[in-house]
Length: 548
Image (cartoon, rainbow, N blue to C red):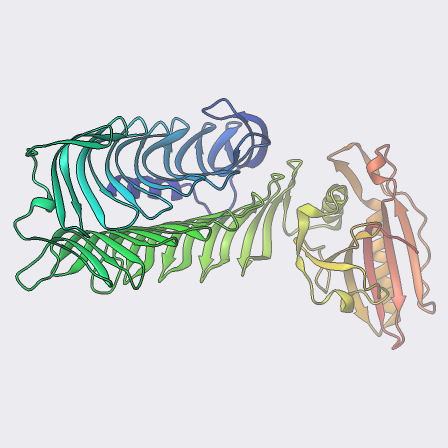
């Protein structure tokens, strides 16, 4: 456990309060020579830090976790298309050290790995609720192993070789109260003999019984309480308990609920305490530090329904503290969590490679400090000039403003005085034009209307509205657009319509003179409008609007 804790802390050491070099990298190779697409932290042109490897074909779907020079190294989880997963400590691109594997048939292994193969000590818990605890070599049971059978009435303590009982040992059958001691070959008892090792089955205080309410196997105290290594099956609660007991209380071991959950770890009078593993079929897998029966400290939590992963800390069972979170779409969140929500300072990396750093609340961006587009352009979340803000919107328009698209806005309809189209969706923008007085919005119907809206003034004073209109007209005429797919710097093209506050609307339309067909329907509208209450508004609309 100490080795795991040290490695986990080193993984979280990569966590910073803003993204440091995040990108999307194509045609990466894993340790099996399979190709994947990477999104996440990058250094020296290679995956370094936390990120996502997404596979386009084969039975592997995703790996999420830590990378060193493109190799899976540190804490990581791999998902397969058949429902299986691998999670634990990786080196040389494969599981090495402590890890967990759920197979497609529902078998759960928790234990030691070497280059992705079970080697060392571990526990296999089968879908039928039987288990084997012992040694493994090259994925096969080897050495002394304790095996509980499916019906919960037979337990054995026998030496294995080549994945079968091949050696000396003991077996106890509770219903008949029969003990077998001797030699097994290829899973069959061949002869009576006296094994040379001491087993709980041969303890002088050993008791075995099977009733309609329970099965009890193991040594007991003078008062009849289980002690040392023992097994108890509560038939009414459908729960099996195996491990080390003190005065009838399980202190460290396995708890198996028939066809439901599996738990492994130390316990006290309150519940789980120390480093534990908890699993429920098709629901969740968790491992980490427990206190008072709740996760408290460094943890790994996998939602098996959503295929999401959380590496970080928990307080009383709730995600709180520094963390990395990977959702089912391959998006990575890194930063502060509070009561289960991404809240505080951090960054988000989409599967496209687009990254937003800033301040978050309940999983939504409150303030973006920097934005990296999928194309690799880096923007500040607070542009200082209209030209800077306009360049951002021009570059992000070609991907429907996805790189600066925030959460849905409840204020959208109120912000757009002349737009009552209920088919539109209104999103908060992650950037703001300098001088705007309202929340900047991105408006979309996912078809022919995709534009950015920025409101600069709302007033009853016609002169002020006219002055703001004229000021923005001059700034727009002076703006230079460059970068991205616009190879040569250009200026907006259009004739300014003189402001006339007596009209309901004065509108100037600017085009972007570029050869790229991405901007065929792109325009910038400068608008002065008056509502029925004689209140004036001056705004910019940038993008594409269906005039029908």
